[in-house]
Length: 166
Image (cartoon, rainbow, N blue to C red; front, side, top):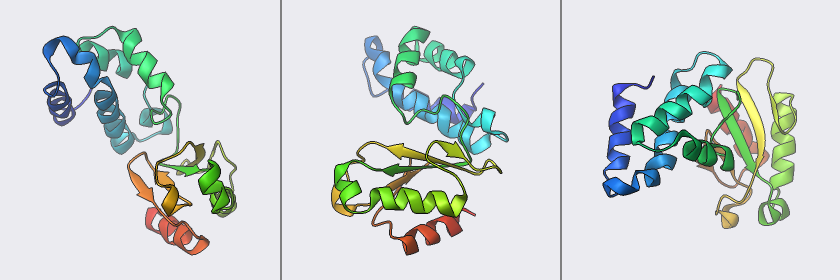
């Protein structure tokens, strides 16, 4: 279900914890599984976590599947439903909002022809509103595919980032 490379990465996560605390590796293991699916999935449905993948990860690290589901459904970094190839999450919490976070989200939405919570017709972009990303001093900030944080997102910076993703 996952590549040998991803399984080796999960093994490295597991090695960080005592054998009786394998549950501690679930966040990292789910992140690794999602990253592989996002990079190799041809369709939006293949670029998210589904029940089979979550159960596989749980069984691989030796925890009950429900424990993995609890984590996957609690944190918004785990995509449980299809998203675009590029998931753009814009922080709109108060510090970012005061420094243009809402305006940045609106600008991106207009550029892509979508609203918050939607995916572009070509399946390339999903625009989401996110919680604090811990970079209030760099506001407004956005996160691309849960991995790449972008700071000081003025309209010019947004245009540059979107061009890079095209």
